[in-house]
Amino acid sequence: MSRQPSKRARASATVKSATFDLLRGFGITKVFGNPGSTELPFLSDWPDDIEYVLGLQEASVIGMADGYAQATRNAAFVNLHAAAGVGHALGNIFTAFRNQTPMVISAGQQARSILPLQAFLYAERASEFPRPYVKYSVEPARPEDVPGALARAYYEAMQPPCGPTFVSVPIDDWDKPAQPVAVRRVSRELGPDAEMMRALADAIVASKRPAFVVGPSVDKDQAVDAMVKLAERANASVWVSPFSPRCSFPERHPLFAGFLHASPAQLSDALREHDLVVVFGAPVFTFHVEGHPEIFHDGTVLWQITDNPVNAAVMPAGSSIVATMKPAIAALQALLPETKRAKPPSRILPPPPAAKNPIPAEYLMHMIAETMPKDALVVEEAPSHRPIMQKHLPMRGQDSFYTMSSGGLGWSLPAAVGVALDRSKQRTICLIGDGSAMYSIQALWTAAQRKLPLTVIVINNSGYGAMRSFSQVMQVRNVPGLELPDIDFVKIAQGLGCDAVRVSEAAKLGAALKKGFASSNTTLIEVMVDFAVPILYGQKH
Image (cartoon, rainbow, N blue to C red; front, side, top):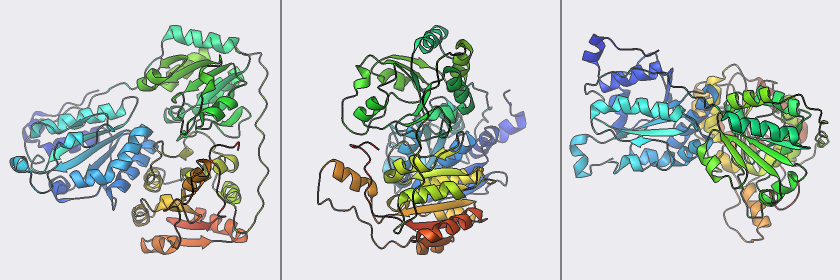
């Protein structure tokens, strides 16, 4: 129900007071930021009931807000410095857009009176700067329009497909009078087309060997348990969509078939034996290398259920249903009869890897799986080790795994801080490569200051492992800039206030992991792993 402000409140409200009332009404209790001069009027006399979360660089601020928003399933509110600060943040704004993370980004702007003079810290065409990677972007024409713009930014951010929005606020707007804006209820579920759902159910019944491909929206919509029941009702093999940043199906379930590659040829090969492929909550498909996607031409029946109309529009073959996951999966469950189809064969699991020196990445993943708390959450940014992780470190399902959809580094370490801010009674594990860690290493300070239950595991192979792999696949040689020797993550972490240890012997790994996972503070474990170059594409895994 809308909450209407009193006459007295309407008479005395300012842009600033109206904004804080909006945040309270939206259930936003934290503001993520890195302060600059154009934000000081907003930050002055800060209220006791809203927490300011300080990050030491704007990309880290956005990453923390992204992780927190994904964990809470509510839009995060961010306050950035003017043009330069927004520029620092753009890489992770792009990632938030690709992650479909709800987020309202506000940024300072110079005073309206000197905007025509192109003053110092002036942001020219501020609303255009973060486009096209925000859903809505505006610098309000008048101070009194700011609360309404922020309200619209929140509603836009929360509508499927979710994403970041942006509002530029001049420094002298905050103390100007403004009418309070009532908080409204806006529905967020999209129901499926009934006729198309019946056609999809008929296709599943008629299929001899169906495959379900699950993407991130299943987990985001808290529909993993419903997805499991649907797969069991249909006896369908379940695959993970390429580059999915969430875990939308338990990875040790008998129906779990594996992870689809971002290579068109390898994906087509994996799905070749299925006569029907239904994609839930993901594009069809996200590719990373060139190749012929035979699946679009070999007679395979393709269906998609997506909350993103753009994904439906670009699907090159088959049928798309635009809907959010909960109502769509529930409707499909109701339409499907109990199947007489035999269960597909279970996935063959690899044997436990052996302990060796130097430490193989496979053994590290196995030991993390063996020692981590059962309810721990994993935030990952180790692209070269992801196939190994997928073999040896299974995720349990709902709210167990987070990574980035963009391919841009510098997200996962601050995102892990944001997740840990909300999940303070669980252990958050950030699994990150040495190259990735250096993009937003300053996020460790925020975690250490708040004594968050976060364990950061730096997989140190002294270089950009993914680029080493691609240089082999692409048969290019003498590439500069791939090696990262002599970075001491233990000293860096200790300098930022964290407990830290380096492990270079397999015999000491288990004890170090157990100690790190049991700590009440933020810890970093640097694991020196085998230099071997993983092959991401071009060969069968």
